[in-house]
Image (cartoon, rainbow, N blue to C red; front, top):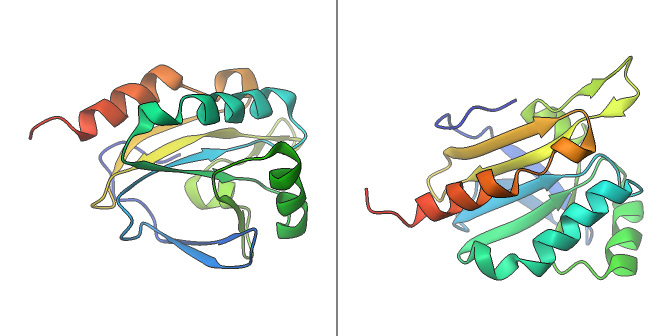
Length: 151
């Protein structure tokens, strides 16, 4: 898993329209939430919390990364009316690119979140094997608040 203060790895992901999304990019700060799967009810609740509280993340672009393929991700995004871009990996799972692996004999995909600032530096990184522990709302809020703090 990535460490806060480290440079974010270069990643090329694909959105549900098939467009490349390069991270870190020039779009300012980005919060990536990595779902265990689109069928995970706990991960879906976390995404709904991100949607409901998106005003709190002012100036931060929220992206949702899923391990499924683009077509599956697009159907899920439409069905759930997700306002954020939903990303998949081109070759590898987006999760593998940041160190969220499969645990428990390869059966349980880890999930979590990463906040990357406008300079490509990781400001928050949190992952967990159990989805109930993967969404660190307090840690995200503190890291987002620190983005606006004077240096």
